[in-house]
Length: 194
Image 1 (cartoon, rainbow, N blue to C red):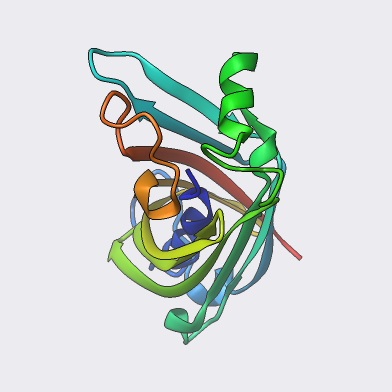
Image 2: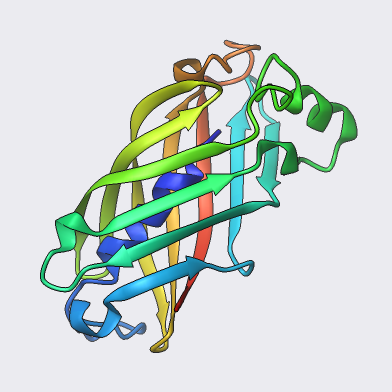
């Protein structure tokens, strides 16, 4: 459930796209270049489906990160992100406690989940894919996230980020096959240029 971090890398790609006639004015990389801090206006939500319907839906309340858009050198733009898994919230105390336990996040031993970008690829006039290394519960794997630019106002930039991650890569696949091995992330990331 740590795919959230990859989303930030995707944001970097989207910010480099050329101007289009879309509802959102897409900045040029020269306009958007710089270092951004992820703001508290961002949100990181996830869903794990269950056989027969339902499942687990939740969000993370504590996270931080930066992304650095490099004009003229988009592939070397950087995204760094960390979230605190103990901040998971599903609205059900029993499920929250289980997710924090050794069976899933093991927050007693692993305080953070991190993402470091390695590659940014433009996929459309206002979209990109960010690929990097996600580390959770002492295990690391390559993950990719799709990003779509949703707002731009000079110093502020916002993206929708989505991705699907296999829980088994991070020894968090308890409950399969009743609960899906796939975690779907839906993030809204806001950045403020410093």
